[in-house]
Figure 1 (tube, rainbow, N blue to C red):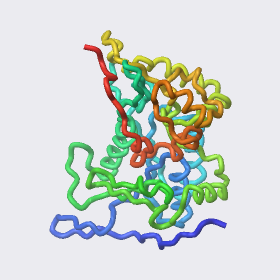
Figure 2 (figure 1 turned 120 degrees about the vertical axis):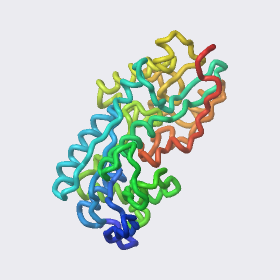
Figure 3 (figure 1 turned 60 degrees about the vertical axis):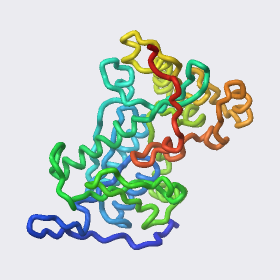
Figure 4 (figure 1 turned 30 degrees about the vertical axis):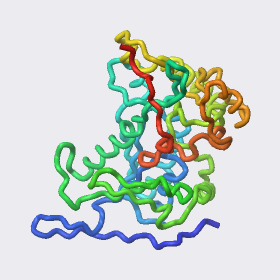
Length: 334
């Protein structure tokens, strides 16, 4: 039996136009921010089945470095869920995050890498990847759909209702967009009162029990279980992330190309050792604490250490926002 909604879905409305000024009574469009993870996949299916109102578009922001399982799942969602319901799936991109990170000619929006500063103190680099590779291409597509590509001004009152897949167990991460022409809505919380478990149960009933987490292949917020899964099930992808981890050890590719020495080292794994040597085989919290005692690094709880970021990467709810990055002196030497 599927979980039931506690609120009736909102009904579509229309715009009222008075003397050329648009008075907003409802969104111009409904769009789903589709990450192809648990929550957003559930929202797409709920809309396709008519349990929630039909969205006009589902938009997938492709970083160019998603796991193969995510691309396969997205293809299946489009063919089996979206197309029969008449919901177009739009794939947008700002480039390939892996290639951009290693290209000295490209302005790279930094990933939240685990770092060791020159004094050995641990920290994280600033997270800019979500804004550049998720939010930016979605905004660009929304403007295009509305008919006001940048730098055209969107008239006051015209907006898109954007559905974001945040469930009740993550309600505190629900937030609005930062532009007036987009208004975030969280139907899993407002209409459905569903937790992540409810979403999993629903997807399982549709034959989608294998829905993957949505995040870059080499996301530094992976837990040990995710790293092991890559290593044990996809040798090619494991080789890819190990190679990338080694390549970013001394940081920004542009700085390296110009001969500027960096004051620190960067890593994909929380242990701040090369990924190929990282302790990913069921390390307990106690073992982690003992291993990090000398460096003074704080360790996460055992659940996060193993599972990593539970809900993957969402443009407006990345779990990385909870961790304040520590920059310290990880930068270019003078």
